[in-house]
Length: 107
Image (cartoon, rainbow, N blue to C red; front, top):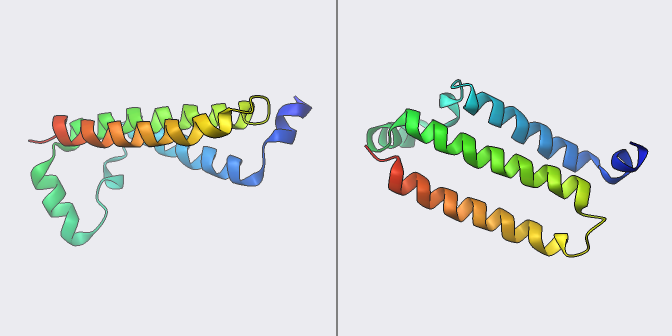
C-alpha cells in the first residue's frame, strides 16, 4: 500500500477525483448541466443534440478516461512504455468519443 501512495502525486489525485466525480454525475443522469457550457452555445447544442443520448455517451467516455487515469497512477513507474501509451490512449478516447457523439447523438 505504501508503494501505491508513493507513486501518486497531488496532480494525479486531483485529476482522478474530478474525473471520478464527473463520471458518477453523468452515469447517475444528473450531469446534464455539464453539457450546458454557455448561454449562446447551449441553446444551439440542445437544439442539435439529444441530451439523454449525449449524457450516456459522455458518461462512457468519462469512465474510460477515469480508468486510463487509474492505470496511469498504478503503472506509469512500473512500465516504462506507459508514458507513450497514456497520451496515445487519451487521444484515441477523445477522438473516437467526439466522433461517436457527433454521429450518434444528433436529433
